[in-house]
Amino acid sequence: YLRGSPQVQIWDTARTESGAQVGSGGLYNNQKHPSKPAKVADRPVGQWNTFQIIMIGEKVTVILNGEIVVDNVVMENYWERDKPIYPTGQIELQSHGSRLYFRNIYIREIPREQGTNTLTDPEKTEGFELLFNGKDMSGWVGGVAGYRVEDGVMICDPLRGGGGNIYTEGEYGDFVMRFEFRLTPGANNGLGIRAPLEGNAAYVAMELQILDDTSPRYRGWLKDWQHHGSIYGVVPAQPGHLKPVGLWNCQEVIARGRQITVKLNGRTIVDADIEKASTPKTIDGQDHPGLLRPSGHIGFLGHGDQVEFRNLRVKRLD
Image (tube, rainbow, N blue to C red; front, top):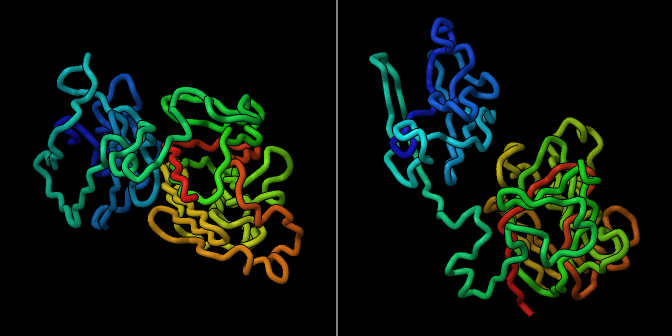
């Protein structure tokens, strides 16, 4: 039970008479929203299964044995069907008389501000500002027609031309930027920093790759400096820290002079002096005439794939 309401389903998939062949993890008591899991991810009876359950607001994501079986689905209020699920409540483990084992039960409470495009009190004190209001594309220029806003999320939309490049109206030199992003399978985008409004940001400024580098689409030919978080063509990022496709990732970028640091989901994946990294030449052997620009716009660089962004915050350091 989540917030006292049933339930994320757990059952033996062999019990076909009860409909268990659909697998565990579904929001069993939903009536208006999906109640069944997207796939069967259960391990055979007798083996341990691993659940990760994320609930933000009234929406639930369930990961079973590394597979997303419920993806940001509204959980309905079982007790009062005409009302949304309660904002708080107990977590319950339930059994219907059969033997069931649990172990390694952990919980992390997520601040309610998360996902609402607002600043936390510490961020306000530190001087962060929002780059996205969660309502429209105010404050952004460029290919804004290729992006749409839905439920507080900025979406690079392939049905609108794949996004193209959008940039902040303001310019930034040294800064800390924090944001969340969610990839679709094989999605490709980029974060341009200290960029002009024209030209290929990977060369006339610098691009930090945003990429589902786990996709079979890239298997066998992706260069080290093309993995997610890399300073494209200049500094390779440490791979392996993206969350599964469909989940939100948290990224922080610190630009202080020539030093660029990228943190993904709490792990530092790039920490490099770009002047040293490009001397005597860049790793890709190409010219990057704008690499050492002292300031410019922050932008997202669409490549025809759906990528979602929220909670875009920046703090100036200069």
